[in-house]
Length: 408
Image (cartoon, rainbow, N blue to C red; front, side, top):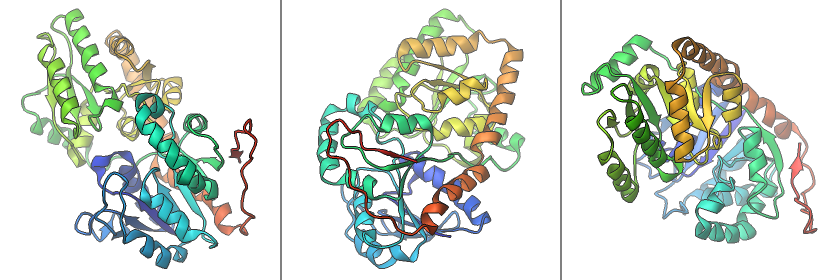
């Protein structure tokens, strides 16, 4: 199968979608499927080949909408050459351009919302939601309606997606999602990490890994860490915050919390970490912590599971129930009190139980999130649409009481 991925950017600093594509592309190639990327990055940004897939960088994009005048003509000329086209993310120009290029053509396209239909955004950013509602009425709902299927990474993401906008009409499918297990020598990766952090030394630490963004709940994490600092005396792990922060105001707010931490607390900022340093940090961490307010999946959570590291997460990360059910981590509410309970629960967990959690984390990853299984799930899901005879266009219900989604 020839696959085209259409995405605003392949820059990993913009979050999980690029990282997910980086992992799955070689796995799809191993199954005999060829991947090409079309993005709105500047031509100098990505390489001509990215993890085994050809890249057509058609930017630079303009503004947050990521408008690129070169994207639509390229899609018009080439999209029909592929067996399946995948749109990654909503609310930007590349979805609209893909729908326009494939209307009336037999090539199916699929949409990964990547959590962008979660109702949390409506509550957190009401002004932005009002703008999105207008765009939904004009454009976005048609992109989802006309897709062969909208692909969700878990049942909870699919359920929440139905709550944000009306009318909501699409063919829904849930596919496995995950990442590749780390390659290389685990001991060497830990050495790389420790050598890069001499000031941390051998001190135990909790690890936050991801974009330092208000959505991730880092402020609540620091507040909870401060509370435990007052409770724990001298025996408290360090807290490592690893990831880029593009919001200067938010970083200032976090620095103010750090300045008020009691002496047992110690915070280390690393910026973005990659490769062996990242895997070493995940392997060496006592636990991975993410008290996020919203995650459709949480790729960094699964990366932690891949190293056998227990995860301490909020119940707003959509795979939290799968993790707690098998004993690979704890979950609490996404506020300061919930995060405090999360860290306190870990502190009170005896070492034999921690060892069982380490084993459960690795087992869950292999069973559910390992990238070869993810690639097989994706192909099994989309193949019926690729081979099927095109069906008549779907006309959404006009009834105000009809939620108008199609479930398959």
